[in-house]
Length: 185
Figure 1 (tube, rainbow, N blue to C red):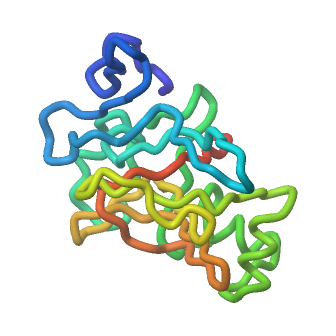
Figure 2: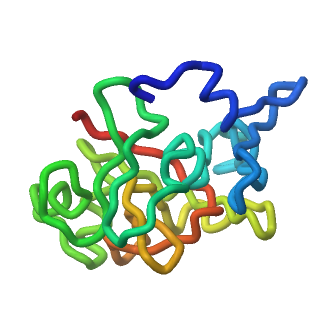
């Protein structure tokens, strides 16, 4: 959100009067409801808050809508000043998901998935919010995180972790909701 004013952010984030639901959009094709500010789930008999899910438009506070070239990075994001969304696809460059995985010797297998879910990375199998159904899916069996990188097929790249595999370059629909993991700039 570097350089983003609260009034600009309000165009992408609108909380209803009960402060229980967060909606994102500015009239684009990706302005569907993303979901509760705090999604909840029951695990081991306890109801737990599990965080906010953002569509790509909200994650990039609207700057992702203007991207047209594969691999192009959104110039701004919901991340705080001094932070940014990671770079997507298979680039082994600074600030990229792939370089992060490589630095911890994480490979695409069950051992790699387990390593990514342990300290210090501590990725959760947080599931995904699918705008088409308005539901949270795959909680406990997969986790997805946005990069700020556009993918030419009309999606955006992200990190996907499953119980037995991990991908640093998966293409996802921009309307789906995922948590964010920012990296320092």
